[in-house]
Amino acid sequence: MHLTPQQAAAILLERRTARNDLVTFASRVPVPGSPSEDADEAAPIPLIESQQAEHHKLILRELQACMTKRHGRLMIMAPPGSAKSTYATVVGPSWFLGREANRRVILASYGSDLAGRHGRRTRQLLRAPETTGILQCELSAESRSATEFALTNGSEYIAGGMMSGMTGNRAHGIVIDDPIKGREQADSQTVRDKTFAAYEDDLLTRLIPGGWVVIINTRWHEDDLCGRILPENWSGESGDIECRDGNVWRVLCLQAECQTNTDPLGRKPGEMLWTEWFDAKHWAQFRLNRRTWSSLYQQIPAPAEGILFRKDDMGTYDKVPDGLRIIGGSDYAVTPDGGDWTEHGIMGIAPDGTWYLLDWWRGQVGPEEWIERKIDMMVRWSPLAWFGEAGPIRRSTEGRLRARMIDRAAKCRIEWLPSIQDKATRAQSAIAQAGMGRLLWPRAAWVAELQRQCLVFPAGSPDDGVDTISILARGADTLGKATKPTPQRPRPHAAPGGWMG
Image 1 (tube, rainbow, N blue to C red):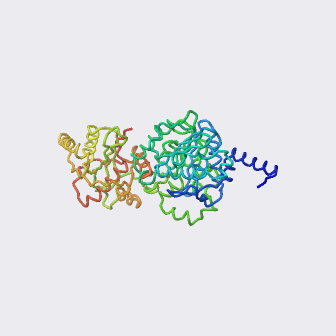
Image 2 (cartoon, rainbow, N blue to C red; image 1 turned 60 degrees about the vertical axis):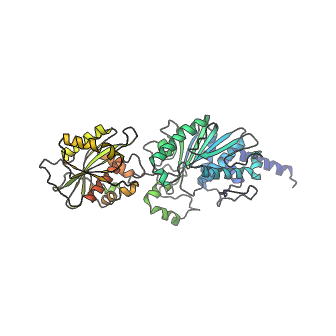
Image 3 (cartoon, rainbow, N blue to C red; image 1 turned 90 degrees about the vertical axis):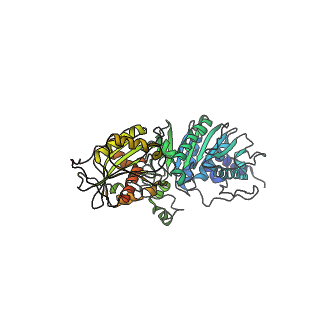
């Protein structure tokens, strides 16, 4: 087709604008949907189902600012289905690689399969005629892999799983999209630790000095990758935020329902995201599950009012009633320096079935110390029984514990309960009792940290105190109507307990 000089000039101007502006670029290229595993390279590109929404333009503007800034840091948190990965993982890196020569980008996701899907979409976009016309470069003829390919301008793209060990590769920018696969992995302390170690040791060390980092994430857990970087008191704010890694991160927290005064789209509290696409019925189905709504859709995995344990249900007492049946319970750290705590608790069961938390101790110490503190509490409270979960701790410490109980004349029945791996299942009895307002708290120094653990459970860390409450609850259910005479002694209004830092 013959073009007039004016038409040719207009096309050149449009291409130049798209090369210099990511929002314009995204509006001029065929943004792809998700190709199949064996996508035909010659097939037409499946396009996304909607045009750019305001939050897409926001993401693109912030991406460009991050990718063109020395030491840029950008964190994008948004609900599933909001197309954040399409623009931040596919469109943005494509523009960056084609705009300047000899650039490298590393893309990391929770697994190599997801990284490969992102790579295929990026490669599809880069081979589109509209894209090559704007960027004035194209895929190298040798680039057939979805996880590693190059452009004719010398730029390179590498994709892989978070823990795949992409050593030996240097990059001007790193994109991390969905570093954790789902709820089961997010609830695993081991997986969270390995994910963060891979981020610090394997990915950041690949960054060329001055390089940028973008994290695209739907929040699963208070202690996920974003949670470990953000300040401890972060509660959904957007903007430039000084984080625990010493960097100032540009944070975009796009909640399904705005609940802050710092919404990056300028929404007011109560206004919903992308109303042209998501209707009220779509959101309603996810509001039913409090934890899912708070974490995946509001980006606050541990809301202040609680998830399974509710703050409004945490009643206090000033004086305990007579006739309490007293029990003890413990959750044990396997090793004193492994990050977990050993926690001992004392609980009283009233004749009307109400539970009273009476005393507490926690410490990151070995058995030689926590055995003595446990016996201290036995001597002080004379519990009917002491409960714990059977396992390695029983096999390694029960003999020493019983020997010290004889030495110190501490008489208490030791009960070992079957192990339950799922923490939420283990806590159901305690959660139900608290929900009925029948789990009461004293006014004591140790209460604040224990309540904090309960309110963020199961999205928070540590949770050893919640595990101890769960043991006490299971013990109360096991105890039945067993009783034993309680020695006459003054009853404290609120036992001081011990609380080691």
